[in-house]
Length: 260
Image (cartoon, rainbow, N blue to C red):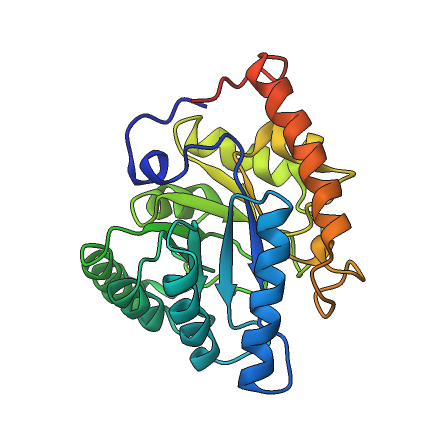
């Protein structure tokens, strides 16, 4: 991958970065923080490159609680946030804490044209307030398509609104169709990062990372391989072993995509 000097390359210097998802499961705020601590320790011991803190099961306060803890205990950790249904809070957290990247499930295509203009202006202002990399979605899982524009046009617009695209299938844990990644690549070219956002497994990692530049992983890392489970060390180690093999193969030029 040759993507030059950008927010992305200044933040992600590991080829094909793997980012583990902290879904913030638990029955109380205290339990959710305890589980996040335990799961983060497993992810770090097993060699992931960073984590995403997301209020998938927990609330917005839980995201803040985890970020406060991470700030004090893991100052060197590559950490991102995805505050579902509240990107304003994600940017607020990035102003308050060290947030290396922010994930937003949609940056283009989800709004009608009359609403999209204001959204684009606001997003530009928010991005200017923080140094964080912005991961954005176009045709992301569970997101509506209201732009009235072709997918390719929304992708071109989205490239001006974020630093990398996160690509998914239709649901959490569902494998991302490689043909969709290739379709996106045909529009954005090799200079714009594409991140797998759902369904990466030890079995498909070679195929997926042959065409993508990294991945956010949740379900496969759980003891049940389902999002409701708990992160399980052997599953993380199994995946990362395959990732290291991909990195070695890619560096040798077999996949035809040179890495930085």
